[in-house]
Amino acid sequence: CWVLAGDFLVQEDSTSVFRNYAKSTWYKNILIPILTQIPLLIRFFQCLRKFSDTGDRFPHLANAGKYALSQMVTLAGTFHP
Image (spheres, rainbow, N blue to C red):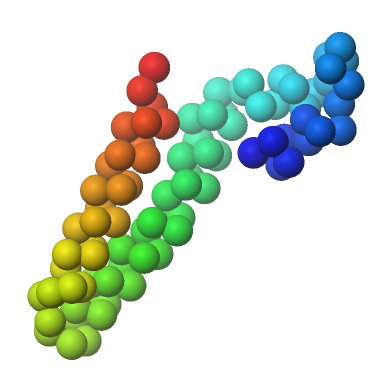
């Protein structure tokens, strides 16, 4: 986030658009949650697909549950005040 926001390019005493962007509601409440959820969703659906292909509950459904729980924890942490 620090690299994407461009804060490393800005002087400490500067009032740049980069510093305001990182504090914006769109960035904190929409972009960051989407970026953190994408890898978890991909792995979750991979586990469900693997279960569908093989029919083995363990370890595929256990891993899918792990990723579902990780998604809930990430969203709760993101939106907790």
